[in-house]
Length: 149
Image 1 (cartoon, rainbow, N blue to C red):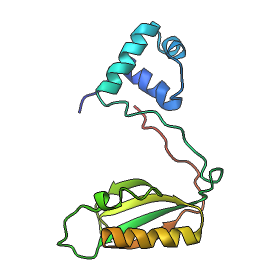
Image 2: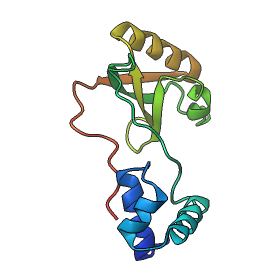
Image 3: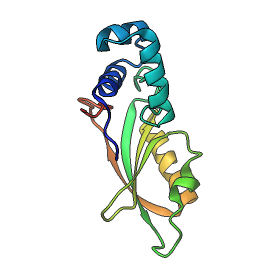
Image 4: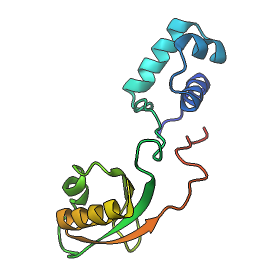
């Protein structure tokens, strides 16, 4: 694991706080020229430090107010561990985490309703041949925080 130079750390922290920050604003904040910042950002992208830029959406506003965590346990422990490939086409799955413990994976999902969740669980079970355990999120005090460097 490589550590970032202090200037690259500053750039990454600024972009993590606001991924839409302009190169001019970024340059002012870290004390470099616009061209130097642009070059460093491009290099951070090429190295895979910056994986991309996204918009964070409000689930309520886009019609997906129900968030849940779904734990997957294989029905057949001897089956190949290809569950992510079996379910990657299911668009309601926002994230898939491989975990240690009783379950193999935990999914973060967003759906429109309890009926939508019930249908999603059926589709996941059929596609991946797993049993599920579901935790419904009641509220989200915070999420998507960037790591502190």
